[in-house]
Length: 126
Picture 1 (cartoon, rainbow, N blue to C red):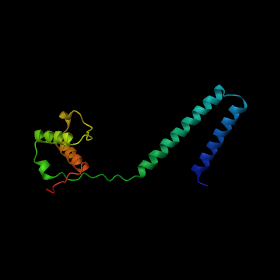
Picture 2: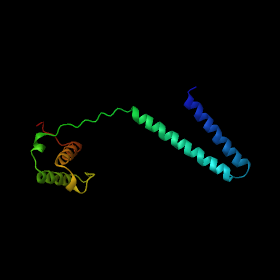
Picture 3: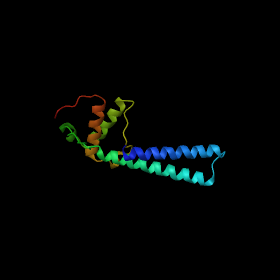
Picture 4: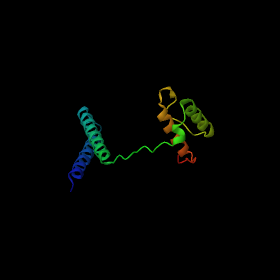
């Protein structure tokens, strides 16, 4: 039996015993509540540790796709106008940024490209 499975069975048995004790003695005591709190904390910490271990195993393969030349040629005013046009064309399109004054032109280009792709608009290859 794997060690983690064995440990979980031990913890389950302890939780069952604590519940039975509370039932037999018609309620919990200050000590049993403190023990339950420690048990809950231990389980939460262990689950968080297991999640972190799982996340470390997930390969990160995010690559930025190249932005098309027609967007690269656009200045900031044209990019903002294109974003406004896309928002008018779709009632469900939303952006994480509401104040675009601090968003770089390259990020605006990526936002437009992502929005057009999500909307199913054809991207020109150049």
